[in-house]
Image 1 (cartoon, rainbow over the protein chains, first blue to last red):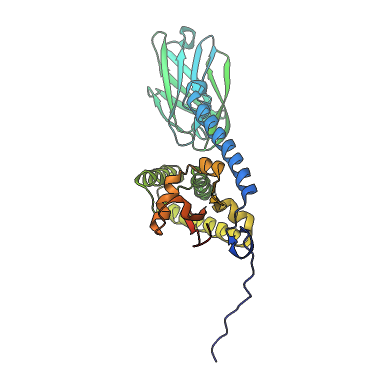
Image 2 (image 1 turned 90 degrees about the vertical axis):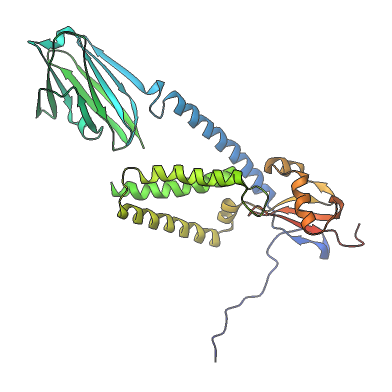
Length: 180
Length: 152
């Protein structure tokens, strides 16, 4: 004998419109739909806010994302909001006081290399030395202004602290928010 | 990080489900060229974020499994709970009933009387007075119930 199918009686479970025998099972739920339309309005508003924030740079790569920190001998331009896996540049502009005997020594914390993903440094330093939780780069230099750029490509989303310090000058402590 | 590969895939899938639901259903049995552009473009853009820099076969396999699992879970929840089904598919909406248009529904869903008449003609109905009820189904098609003879 063959297997018997599993069955259950058909019930009138779908809500109907109309009256009597001419009613049609449509299953409309207008109350839910009105809530959904309200939700859609909110979502479109949120989408608009996200777009405006993006254009302004709150999600990186825009006007509000740019940051500048200065000490007497160093001006640091960077992006306070960066995007993971997306190139970003940290520019160090040195003053005359940063140059000692034709050399600039600048310390950058390890976080610039790892979570902020330093890819290249231009120009190439004459010497690099690791220690004290970071790297000290030595550049040959003549007169100010002298500019060094560090190309970054952050890999980990989150807030990352970093430190940059020129020999004989105050240190700059900054934060970069990396968005996914 | 391996976890990010999974999270990116899950987020990409769920975000697309939301986007497609929000962009809304349009009446018709087939995608218009306009909607084709939307579907392919959304898919392509999501892919760039999902893949990221990890273009390995293992990442692709893991992401495909993640998307399949997300889809299975959503389908299972949709089957078990009516409210999930409604959230994912929406509710069928009456467009015309008792010789009255549901004006708010028509405007919110971007449907015109022409769209309803298009479907009605397909059933041999000559004009709008021959329609008893018109329903926008949750999958986007308009169903026409003709006025029975002698009922008018």
